Length: 117
Image (cartoon, rainbow, N blue to C red; front, top):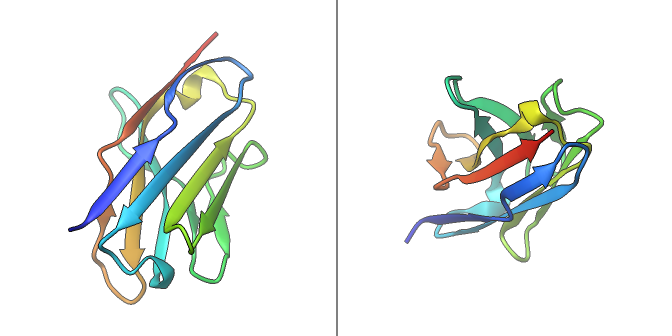
């Protein structure tokens, strides 16, 4: 059974820190690109960060220097550490997985993050 289960969302104040986790099962985690997307109200879903099987990371320009992504292959878990949060980071954050060499995309149910000023 395929599952991508996010946790760690909630409310935080401007400038705060929050870490999201996503535990993935039923998919080839070690051979997949994993990452996070977000969707703010009235906006399209956008990529936030991703990490390849070998550890190479990619972060959106808007979060570089503030967010960090990491993966734990033993736990089939991907993390998003978010620092210096701003109100415009408010969105629903979705865990994402794509097996390397495919165009198959898998999504979590989303976890909301609200940053108050």
